[in-house]
Image (tube, rainbow, N blue to C red; front, side):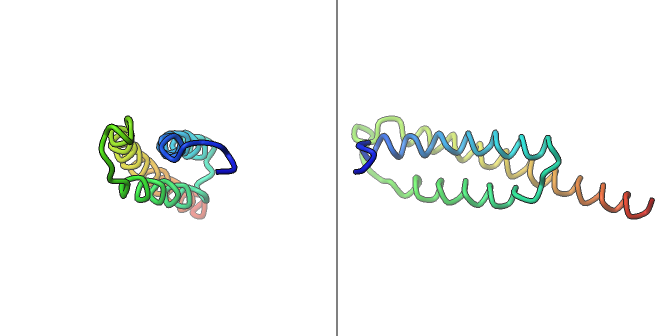
Length: 99
């Protein structure tokens, strides 16, 4: 209520945050900063879980169901990218220890 935003617009904004968190995760991967990646994924999952639980008619939730479906795909792509980045980072560290 402090923000003077309707609950549905707040939820729609949260759905958009998932895409922004993906960008943030990819920036971290690009900069070889893998330490925050799991925390980013956890935040994405938490937002998704809360949005997925919203069960109201489409007329009341505008485009929320579609945004939640897109968010699920974004999270799964990000999970794959994060897994690969962490494995590559671990492999890099193994090679550095050998040399």
